[in-house]
Image 1 (cartoon, rainbow, N blue to C red):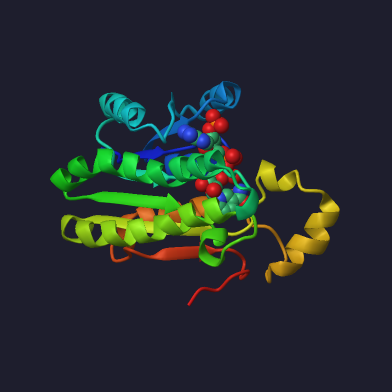
Image 2: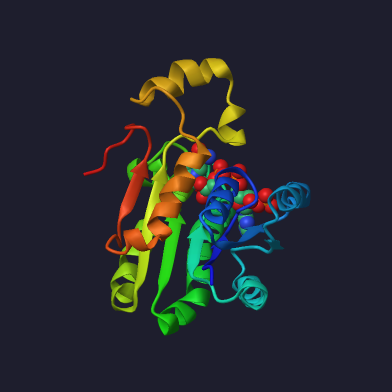
Length: 242
Ligand code: NDP
């Protein structure tokens, strides 16, 4: 029986590529989203992947959704914590709402979803928890104290879960993408991209969502069973962590 993978924020951007990549690799995939029904319906119609609408920051909503996905597809073998948002402002201008929204969506979500699948992974002696961090959680970024804290938090979270899951066949890893050619980055004026962003990327181009998806497919596979508590930096050489 094919393994079941849940991709949060799996209907658009990097998450969409992850959902498609996991389906192609043979998984039964569930893609979740927050509120963009049009994008989700289009994605579902084109991919045949079922979509589930709920707020990953809301534990009770996650609980209902994981129960529904389990009824529809079976117990979750692979969880990809991908949903994320930005609310940028320098600390001296940052509102509490900006802080809370970002921590809730990018970090609380990883607790919520992982907590809700860990018991069944432990019972079945297999699991993969893969969380999408960011280069900006690795090196910091002006205007992103909230986002950098949440994304760095995913690294500590995954290291702890990796230790706890090791004896049960459960791995927990992080992927930290650099600048990826999603709609968000494509909206940046070409001149800014060419003069300010691309010159900082040694490989000389933006990454693609499919390149991040391939990292996820690998970390989810049996071949990656010896890799746990790791952070895979996929950033074109822009930041090389020690
Ligand atoms: P997008 O904004 O394109 O897509 C975000 C997805 O997450 C959407 O499906 C969205 O749903 C969903 N989502 C947002 N908030 C919630 C929520 N509260 N509950 C449930 N789902 C939610 O994001 P990207 O593809 O650009 O980014 C994906 C991940 O990669 C994020 O974690 C981001 O921080 C990280 N990242 C992105 C980089 C980039 O260059 N784009 C670089 C480094 C890291 P809906 O469609 O309904 O809005």
